[in-house]
Image 1 (cartoon, rainbow, N blue to C red):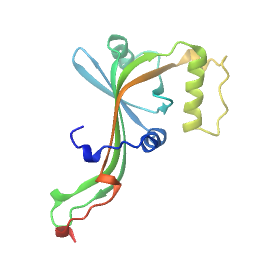
Image 2 (image 1 turned 180 degrees about the vertical axis):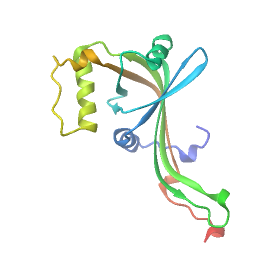
Image 3 (image 1 turned 120 degrees about the horizontal axis):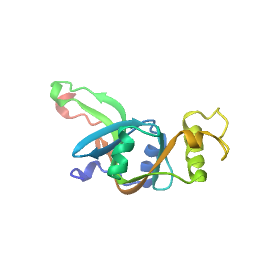
Image 4 (image 1 turned 90 degrees about the vertical axis):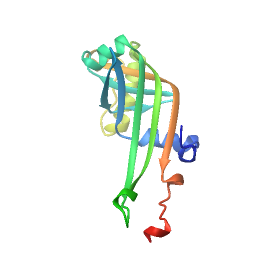
Length: 166
């Protein structure tokens, strides 16, 4: 990370961002053509799970190249420049993950992941039993995290106002 002063190193804070973000962006690549897909996801012990259709460009890319990048962010506020528009900034937190992705074939793991998604996005809905037809009708994908960086701006999550902006 270029700006070490913006790096988030507190693991609890990183896990809070991962647990509460609603949308992640999956980056795949096939034949040197990048492809980004927004997905709903859950984080569980160094893994990212999400569901997918059984076929499509994302699945073709993953079958060809299991190396992926995954990004989440939380925009907290826009901080306008008081004297100069170019002095504007954004208060945010973000995480970028590199890892390997695979299609989950184990029915118990698929059911676990789908139920974690239900808990996060539709907590009022009933849990799926292992024998549910949903596990056959959908793919569950898992990213095994190899590398992860988290950052925030302004540094320390605090709004910084320079003397010229007062």
